[in-house]
Length: 343
Image (cartoon, rainbow, N blue to C red; front, side):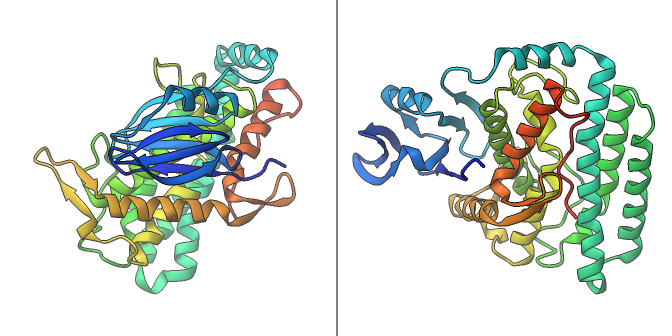
């Protein structure tokens, strides 16, 4: 099994990353603040005004460590990685199958099934654990509607129909999402999902976490030899990692949404950690961002039982496991893709 490696997140503005021997060093004002052996890192994510030496980029590429550059507030900018890995025959199979509308519809059903099933589990667990603090009727109706969506997915559906079901299910889920917030209600009220830019504190958290998911899914797909840009549910668009977006669907509720709710309900993030620009965009400050990144890393170290491979794995390895299963499916070694469904 692949070893869970840390992701190095660099958020300090003006930081400079360089190579020294077999280590990555982080310098601030020409002073070394951190040294990390490259073999302990799975990826590097740089936020804002953070720069890297060309020698470090080449070194990381040779060692399979990707470097992502994001804006200070989490908008993806660029990605640096080494030579393309994996079997060229696998990628050619991926490209052929992605051009097949019927096959793409079937693959899209797998991804959307994982997403809707995990959204339903979020609502069911909330009813089980905190029913006295929530609107039981609204959540129960949400569970019922999502169950109906899952049944509809079992039918022969076109790709557009699958997308329509996914959109309706997302609307149902986010319509009751505010009920899942049981602390700091005034500061973290949620009305609807919005992005580019996020217009409230909750959407700011979700958008940032989804960006982290894209990074991890992209890296996992690249590691098993798949092209992150060619998807099935999400179609080709220049600059968009469509397959990474496909893969992350099943992880949105299970990892990102749960973590955002935990941070809010346990008061680990607070209203003072967010600010609104004149244009109405909500952004988190550096301290809140660091709190979120630490919590995300800690969550990835937790173990969970994977029903398909029948063993416990670190949550952070789920991306790699699912990418590996997806590759096996596209090679024809599996009859279908088994999404990760949280119980």
